[in-house]
Image (cartoon, rainbow, N blue to C red):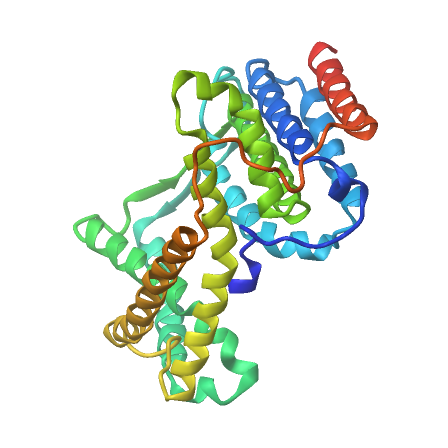
Length: 342
């Protein structure tokens, strides 16, 4: 799980995307966000979303990064977006015309209680099986541990239904639905899913093909005009650089602490809720201590080397924009601009 966190992770390479200046990537990302913001004002206009999706796919191919690496970092967002987006299908949005109607399904409280009673027994059985200590030994049964929380939620939902319908007559009709799916709800689901997936893919390409130092240099150069307004641009750049640089280090130290606690007999993935919190407390205390110690050592090292924010900084990676940078920016602007017009 720790290795799937993309923030601050850089994949060395010599692809076209790697050779671009970080300013080029930041400007392209800003323009794509602006174009998607404009495209959201016009319903059922698919051209801008198709254009940015094609640009994202082209960027993945040109970056040389394995699609499997990207999928390991995107799949959770895809699942969460789809599950949460299902609740928007019935929203009216700007277009409240009904697209499809599901139901209503007519039944009785007696039949609904019988079905839910059987489902409650199944959920209770799965929850009890997931608590067995033998699951830690038999590898083929470890997947049952993942059903512990969903089965508990299902059991609580069924008990809540029985409690709310306790005084209802058994022969009383009970209707499920109707569920009206609107054109506006489908449109909202489509644009939210596309925008989140595309922007997250572009942000992954930015961090995975750009070294943190180069990324901060490009951000500092783009924000340089704000110095005239007396804004602390260099301070902000230093804080972002330190955050990006030390995220992989902290993740590595967290993994080492987990292995150390596991070798001493600690179990962070099983037990009661109280036992898990106690195990996590044994992990967080040394992690916070190590983080504060690293921050103190870094401050002493900066002072010992005479680091100062004031003055013009020497850039290590950022140079003048080349021909390839201008071509990439022109392609992105032309493709997204044409999609917005047509």
